[in-house]
Length: 133
Image (cartoon, rainbow, N blue to C red):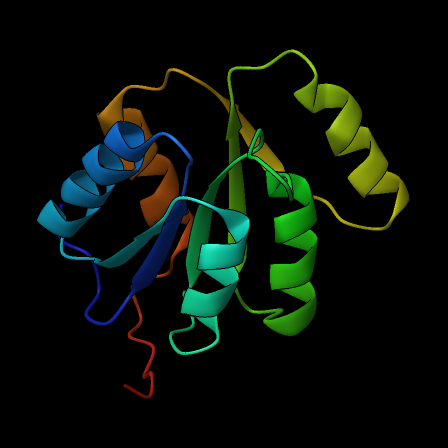
């Protein structure tokens, strides 16, 4: 399944192997992908390169994924955020975000790559989005 040209995905996961595996999968589908391993690193990345969608692990050191999602969507409201978590405490964090007016989709880890690609392709319309390099 080929992605629309210039569709950008940011992957934020503190587990390097997971982030890089997802990056390979989505690059193979034609997406432009950047990986970050901390929220701080991701914030630095998006200051120069704005994604259309961010796949964000909930449980991260320092700033958690939900807090990052709030920062991302407040600065780049057109960016979609998909949270992933294998941690039972994520539900409480998600409820806190909802009380702050932020609704995020959350997927449970582990997730089969084909399912992940299908979900992302539905979230990113096929129409091309021009980005400044």
